Figure 1 (tube, rainbow, N blue to C red):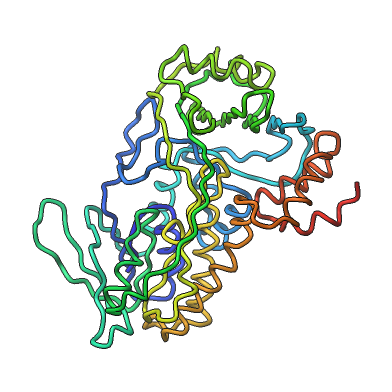
Figure 2 (figure 1 turned 45 degrees about the vertical axis):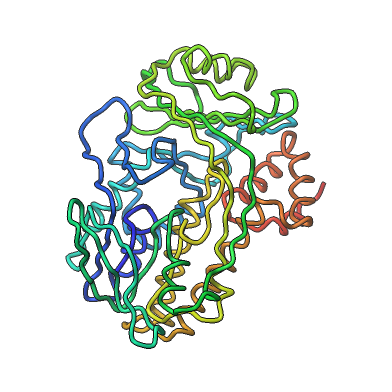
Length: 423
């Protein structure tokens, strides 16, 4: 039983499909139709659903392990792969990165396109059921509270609840997960509440979708401008998505007003990227309103530190670790967690969800896996920060340093390996 039908939940379904007789995904909201529209359709329960989405190279590698032929399916829907260096114009605070072939492949598209691809791939698995309009409101447990045996579900426009039993429950319900409270209730212990670490980035965003005709498109798939003192610490990103759509996101610190109309949007970007971004948008046609986002804190739930953890339950994705969207890590971290789940199901958890120690071991292994992106985003490791700073200074004048920096950002290598890079 999988709680939540977003990217993490759909990938978890792929991970579990080969290990269980039946896999049910319970999604609270309804997926948007694939009807042709100027801007990508969105699902109500996805806070960042209207924003562009970037699947990092490590995320693409995780998809490879979980979903056969997903690249061809995604490209058939309109997404395009691109090289993170050769096909990108990237400006750091100290200069532009050289554009050269890196072999770091990535995809940019709308969230709805990725979800559509993953749902279509699940449609080929007869033992997987996807149920929309199902809100999970609590867990079911055995008499001791030591094992989760299912979930309590409320349906749309239905005042009652339904009990659904399962050998294994996977929480992928996202940043709004109630799992900590549910576990405490199940174990009847106030001490079962998980610790939480929050690191607020102080960022806020405005995003918008545009359309560019083929003859007006720039020679890059991605343009990104990092925050810098000479731009008032404003930054921006523009990405090529599907069907002639381009996503743009603008970032600034709290207190700096975000644009709310066409003129303000263009004024914001005018001085960024030596005018390159403004030039591209001057040829583009807006196809969506301007959407603004402000809650961008990084949050880690420390389920791995709980002394009591029920068997038959695991959690991954944003239900465990939420990252500031600026870094583009969310889908990749969820995909890596789903691969870890597949490996645990193959080697540690039995068909009944395993012993409590096995389920808790998954959370410990997930915490270890998430430690690298957490340090990268929050700067909690001074050694990582020192190495990143050194290579950051070299990158505008060195393709080797630029590729190494991108490899860290795409979670292909840990920051500590950068010390091997000669100055």
